[in-house]
Image (tube, rainbow, N blue to C red; front, side, top):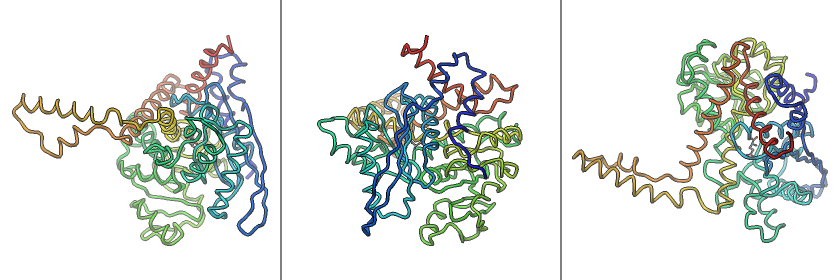
Length: 471
Ligand code: GLU
């Protein structure tokens, strides 16, 4: 397979939206470009004393809103093109879900599985130090988050290093999101991207007309689903989709894939993989040694939740799913996307579908700046009001509300309830914004991705205009 330039792919998709936009070419060029890229190399002393030189990048794609925002990934295919593409996707993603940030992304070229915890800690702290030195991190500058190969643990090393290096910054905890709760994290962040994928898929399935077009019934219930990747995003997406009534018929990881048309329990598969060290050999399921073959399994919904460029011109003809739900960033190349669109499939684009992570990162950042847990000021007050309302209803009707129901409806919201409902509202609202644009151009068979770009570019162009940069 020829090397696919990822940033070029993103811009190819961007260009498809340009014909529908009224903005002058200058403003579109400014939006399209990646504003700044920092490439740094630094030495890592391995546990045995050997020294290795690592390459790392941070790209800030757009500064129309600050801070810029986006994850840091640890993977062997990290390179400049990739971080620029992913930073661009972050810009559009934030605009779509009305998160007031510019887009950024970072990465270290390293296979995290081959390094000890102490080595990874040294890598993370050193990279953070390099970012501080060049002003590529800060609560109002650029705020990293977890991505492929990183998680809450790495984020707590980042915040600790930032705290140690900066003085008297009361907002220092807002320098990174996806932190553990005691380190200023917000409840619900870990699950947020996967939960957002579920909300997006469920909403898309709610439109009977759209489902009819691809030969499916309305609703997620009973739909057969294949998920590629059981990392944080894939695992949570699969889990919530299963809880929402979808049937998980296929699951893929890097060591292989499993298939059972009758459905598999996600938790049981995860347990099996933990115990045996492999996804293969799950009772009742058929093994596929070539992991990529999972993408070609018969199903209604395919959720690529691993890395970019998974569905290409090489395998697109064999994809059977009617709905491709892009939980990963860039899993379908631009050409393969066109081919799927022609076949009549629906692609739920990454820049919308996986925006749940950054949405809840925004909530975490707000929490860090306000220095108070969501719900702390209002929970008990709301509970008291709810109890008074219920008491009034009981007095007026002469009927009693049962104990368990009383508890359920009078309960004031916890932080996690607020985060999850804020996320649900965002995902539903944003889908409807994109779908409405798509409906305007229905006759032209506009893909949802182009509609998503139109939605994002309009918002970004407006903010440049508000800044007075363009007439
Ligand atoms: N890495 C995630 C993404 O690609 C989250 C970014 C963030 O929360 O800043 O959307």
